[in-house]
Image (cartoon, rainbow, N blue to C red):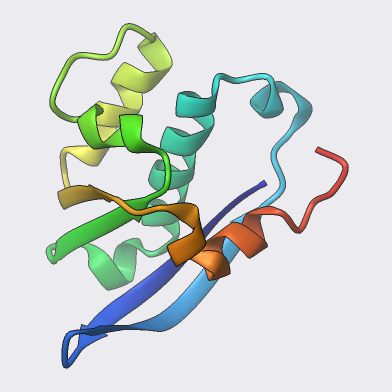
Length: 114
């Protein structure tokens, strides 16, 4: 599955505001890892759009290749569409090991049959 945690930085510390998760369809499960991870970003930003649109967004991901997604042209048409969709947001993508984001990692594992 995919999951996201919307947090707000208060006095230098991230405080969770909302959590979302979704089970992936069989066809989505067949996507490459970077496509699933990129979809999670696009999907979660759409879910949180009323809260984040127009704000500076620091996006933390445990999938390091996503850090370069907006800096170079992806080969996949699907990724190109999603990069285009992300352009309306003010995003800074930062890599963070999954062990430092246990809440989102746990939510993405709610669907054991994937």
